[in-house]
Image 1 (cartoon, one colour):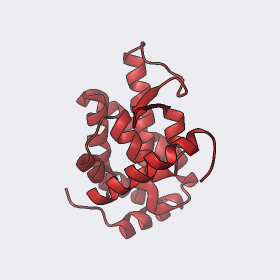
Image 2 (spheres, rainbow, N blue to C red; image 1 turned 180 degrees about the vertical axis):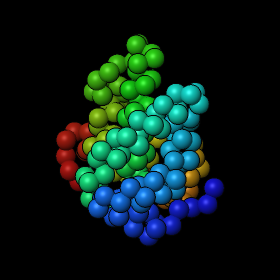
Image 3 (cartoon, one colour; image 1 turned 60 degrees about the vertical axis):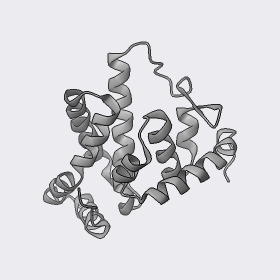
Image 4 (cartoon, helix red, strand yellow; image 1 turned 90 degrees about the vertical axis):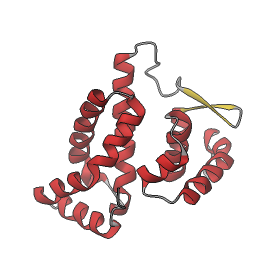
Length: 172
């Protein structure tokens, strides 16, 4: 799948924020495949992934005006997809905790909560979340986030290095 033209996506977001429904439809057409891939990877169920995709784009439309940097819309969509997928997974598996403070994952031998991962700078948090919470490989993360594999590794390293400080509530 070819990479998206960031300038094109940024313009679509700008127009969609101004109420251009055609721009939002184009934004959907340009981005839905990667979001569907993410949902399928996370949920391991194509039907649930379709449900998650629908809810993701409903929430995106309702909250598009909150996007401060139009160039980050792909990562923002992935974050929405993750939260929607998590809720669907919790709905279908009641044994999963519903509180983000109780959902933990082990990174570098230490337990961290979902909430702590989301305290990191956006891209670092997304990369760690996709790797350790969703179990995706670096190549898949790079594809979903429109990053180079080397960038994924760099974000992973810096996120792991800074995670203890952000988990403790500090802003580095």
